[in-house]
Image (cartoon, rainbow, N blue to C red; front, side):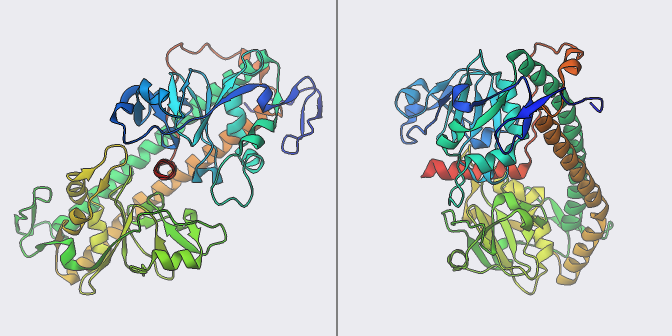
Amino acid sequence: MDALKPYPSYKEAGVDWLGRVPAHWEVRKLKNTVSFLGGGTPSKANTAFWNGTIPWVSPKDMRGPWISSATDYITQEAVWGSATSVIPPHAVILVVRSGILRRTIPVAINIVEVALNQDMKALRPKRDLIVGEYLRALIQGNETALIAEWTKQGATVESIEHEFLANSRIPLPPLFEQRFIARFLDHADRRIRRYIRAKRRLIALLNEQKQAIIHGAVTRGLDPNVRLKPSGVEWLGDVPEHWEVVRLKVIATHIVDCLHATPVYSNEGEYPAIRTADVQAGQLLLATARRVSEEQYRAWTARMPPTAGDILYTREGERFGLAALVPPGVQLCISQRMMAFRIHERQVSAYFMWQINCQHVYAQAAADLIGAAAPHVNVSRIRNFWLAKPPKPEQAQIVAMIERAITQPDTLISKARGEITLLQEYRTRLIADVVTGKLDVREAAAKLPEESDEEPENLEDSTDEEISESEEESEDSDEN
């Protein structure tokens, strides 16, 4: 790839974000190269519409370059009785309404017939003009520019305006050259995704190592020779003889559920509103949290303003069961699908935060899940979580040991995540340079080995946080 060179000659494209394009390329409006199909949500009240055989794709299903399935399935009756429609294979599917559009445009190609919800749009390529894989790559490689061009500035809801989308001008190489570009980028993308998948496997193994350290510490303590007794709790097993086993409501002074609505986010807001996407086990991702105004902050903290040392807990969605502490010096609120616990001052909050992240507490939550597509835990179940409680001095010692022991795996996890970020940035730059004609890949693509005719690989590339964000935005729109 280092040997790739520019084309022999260029011309001005007349489009700010494109600059110059190869002299033999065209520049056309998108609406002249594709037809558009939208989506809709069949009535949730009509059971005849659901659990059918047609994948009903929403933003939470956009996890890779190909779509072959979905979380939800609908029937043909749902297609006839709603605004959705059946999309034939090989359309370019993109998210047109979601908070994730602040920073990325999820885009994929369906390899089976699908239907779409109202936050999605299908672009059916005119086969004599444009190749779907080329169009998908064009969007992937130029997300920042296209977000600016396709969205309305200052809008309260992140969405792609159809007029802006349809009238945007795109580079259009000859059809045979689009196929060369698609082939080259598919080859490069497969290699990069495999590297990313290997890094994610490493992160998963390191997280398992952390879990083993934490679980052993919060259920057995620091003395390997301590005498044990049955806890009386199926998932907890034996605990040290001098420990108690108590319910969360016994050691918490406040157990606060969120308001069951989505706050009004604001780019100018100064208060982080913590969603499930912003929580990792033991850590809040404040840098990526969405913000709200002071008015919204006051409304969403009326039940209890979270303060340093409070535990924030994800109670709904794919990422339910994660907990982290509120750090000092931060004023924040909890958004939808979150809870906050304030542990009694006679206890060490961090000890119980680490325990809530363990499998024996997760199992208690999972035993009482409600909902399949968007699982959530009943508040009464959460209040009655069984927890192991050592004396307070021992709680503090256990927390100190955990923090020391997880330093090394945390360092390795951070390094692996950094390497993933670099790989993703390299891929985006490569795609952008190729689809806009900065690099000529015709010769390189012609030399590539033939790929298998088997179903394309869909090596998932979305982070858990991105998946959770898409999931939350999609569920919110379905409810509206």
